[in-house]
Image (cartoon, rainbow, N blue to C red):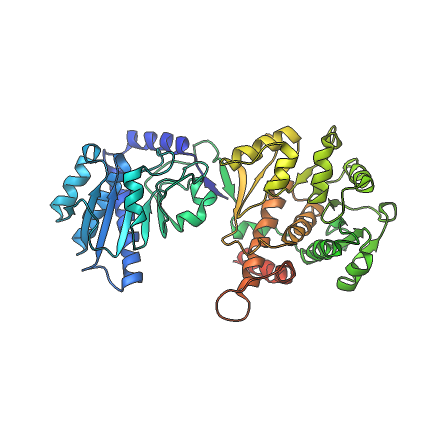
Length: 481
């Protein structure tokens, strides 16, 4: 798991580090790493380092000091370095002296530059950029390398509430922070520079993300003694005469996710069997047979019959994933969850989250999902580019940053439900199943958008579903490695 540590956790780890290493050593490590990344970016973007120009946007405190010391290191490599001091009275004095000794200059305006280093605020910053900094940032015409995080973005929530820096690269010191996954598009590529923080003895990170290798290693594969029942029987209650596609997409995803047997219940028997003849499809729940996990809701309606089916499934002793229309039914009758002891996974988008909880997710999506999981007594997956997953009372919250927004298309959620439902049927606990499914789902979307030609192309959910086997092959390659 990759862990993401809150600003308070990082500050505590830094305080411990400062007690055991010489004064200034962590900042030197941070500045050296920042300078290395900036030099690498110059080389890639301009073809060289010496003779190029960099502007430092320097705020107060250690973040500004990191930028100034990095500027001194770049100046020694032949880079023309100009520092713009946003708070001259609070500048890091030692860093400024080091820059000047190396031949760097201080100016009121950026001047000529090939790259900009954002050292305005660090993890102690909150809220948008102040007017002077915002005006300066708005005029930038070159890529930005941010020191620790893009200024103006909340370090713990990733919230962007006003003017902020848009980084091409973010260089984080010592640990990944929530901002790096919750606001990944604003951070750009994230590079970690170790500075000696001891995170092994720190409290658990507030967020964690399974690596591709972990997802590939945990994804079920048939063993030499497996049969169709032992690999997980996934039940799907989805689709209607109005929305048969939801049933096709959801069952297709469960089949592709290596479920040994998929049972379908609903009025879309014909369309399901025309696409997936291996599915056991019936119209009535009483005819379905047992499953090791159920997915209920995509396109299935919200009438009294839908309510009764959901109530019947939630009364079982197997995991149930509730999505789409099922969430609407549940929002109208939350008592359906009362007394349930078997695992339950709810997969809302932002609008469904409001119906379920009565509140918007807001800027702090992690806290909102954690509260919802505790209140509802169920694991909650809040969809988004950064999908956030919380189980009742469990820490850390899991997160999957998709790396793109290609999955933002109608029917995509039906595919996700089928993927995760198959993992639940295989016996994987809901939070991990949700994170694994989200990872495979995002990868399949990216593969579909890449296609066979140059560049990217818009996709639909059918194209995403078609790439699930390819996405699993990629993840299984990590497993073999």
